[in-house]
Length: 381
Image (cartoon, rainbow, N blue to C red):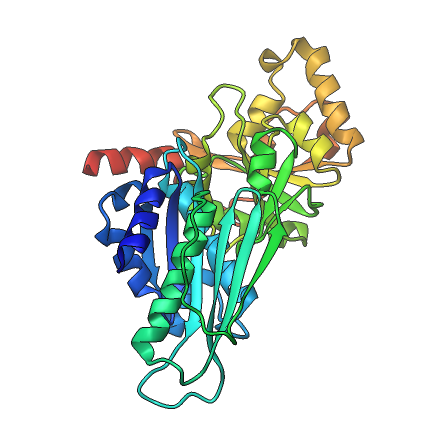
């Protein structure tokens, strides 16, 4: 590493930006350079070499159509960005950096040599494509160029103004693509969006329509009771049921971004999750009309308890608003000292009994809760 490159990396470390680096096919030299210059602990949150297809599949939830391609590297960068948010304390900006490359090896490759580098931040993606002149360098020489491009991408993300030399040949060019893509969770946290749908494979869409059923909860942690309840509810309703995680709570502070990412990680590659700014069911009904809300016995009991409203009139007004949106409730039972409590043990106001249906004990019973799991985890620490 020459002194100029070392100086650029020192300038990167002097900024507040932190990153997660995912790389495949090359890029280990870039990571070594970052760690060789003092201060890398201020920059690098995590780095992972996705050298086998299985490792890349673990990151993306499936194998891409093409390993060295702009869409693949951008998907890696988005995953790295989400990981950086989870690992960060929220005090500094973060980016996800990704590289996919094919360079010279101990056998002749049929295709071109080159790479894609992508950087994902809160406002979108920047990608760098480079095709190398095949046969002009050995593996070490190609690794040098590819890793320098990674350092250039990181430097630009950190707003380091001085350039990073790549030492390209006359027939080699870097193609840069900017894709504006505001972070949907930033829009949600800034109250510019009311909901964000998070698909199992990671896609996040602000304001996407939601149909079917929703199981709302804090999911701290997600456990088998939640999972079996979603399956039982979907079978009962004959519709898909997603998880809904409100980032606001009527009785608690809003969830921090890192905590949101931590909880979302439980669902990755498995279930759809809808994030919302709606802690109350009246608000959820306005946001998700015609949806069926899957609730537990205790939640249903609170919904009809006049103590949580301005008397009976306030309760009935809330239920009327929910009914007007075409929403319904599916109630799951729970065990207590007297037996197993179900919807039949609740006294629903006559005018609104049609809003509620129940799951029988034979259809769903899991005697477990997130609170009990957290207590067990605390006892084992």
